[in-house]
Image (cartoon, rainbow, N blue to C red):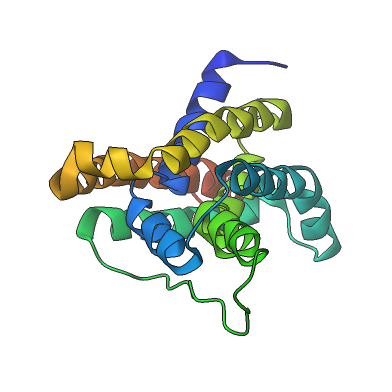
Length: 204
């Protein structure tokens, strides 16, 4: 049931998709808008979102008449384009990081830590799609552990965002983002190849 290799692969895939280091500019933008963020709150909420979709997502797909492998193939395309964003430095997916209608107040910081920081900056559409796609490849328990392990770098980056930005610099952040983009690109291709052959076993 528990497989260290699966946990390691799932961890790396999710780490690349969440891209918490590459998301430092977005985190700084959110913090500038809110004035303050709550790293623990943002991490917990984002992890809960991921875990919910891990265990309930397949049920939702079944209700819609979609099998996991078909979703995995669709998810591989999302991963592919996310990877292209990271490698080529283009913006294909646009998230609204503003929170119109919110009034300034004590609770404003807490709201920003959940929306848009926990969702969609950390647990965005790409992350949720990836988790559902991984169900076709790995055991749910291993993915669950990988999600929990990803909470560590997420909360550390949220706590040390300014220091990491100063340490790596703009060039360092770009290099890391492109490196993980290439890894994610290869994983997207593999995810597509593994599942498309299962969907059309006699055609390929």
